[in-house]
Image (tube, rainbow, N blue to C red; front, side, top):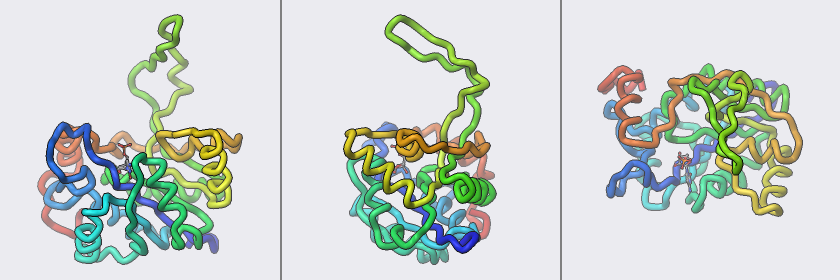
Length: 239
Ligand code: C5P
């Protein structure tokens, strides 16, 4: 609860992990990082954040029982609902958003399960910015020069005006109701959540994120995340 507003975190974790280049049935969110599953590290940060009241997780159905057990074993007490996700990320978030838990919240914060190195500080800064401005997104500036492939050739946008969007992304619930309805009517499929809010013309505030808040997408990312998190951590007080 922040300023009397109930905050619900939605953690989409129903991806298939096809970019891992593995035939393994284990989704990215369940891969161990220093001995602790990625999603448990992520949930631990939301457990620690004083502003977050409730957590909803979307998963592939065969993983629901495993994650429920792992979360309970790790002392994660804020998980209210674990539901089946959809075919696309946006659908998984929409399903999480339509739960009773999310309906009771005034503010929603969405965070990819596969970004386990998020900090409590970043979660709290994004929530506070969304409380003030209606919607906020963690983002970093590109380190490389950005090129856009247009039909007539390459275009190089001014790098100082470019941002790479991460999660957490947070917004007022009423705003997202409108955004999601408009996206549905238009058949718009976004790769993040605040793009739906941008489309209804509401401003979205940028909160400086961190390059370490990486999204685990490939096998190489697991190794980088392991190094960033201090190697083979077995001490559960540190995950
Ligand atoms: O696929 P992508 O890398 O964008 O996934 C980001 C997050 O969204 C991951 O945590 C993944 O598990 C989740 N996701 C989901 N449902 C899908 C696809 C992705 O919950 N259908």
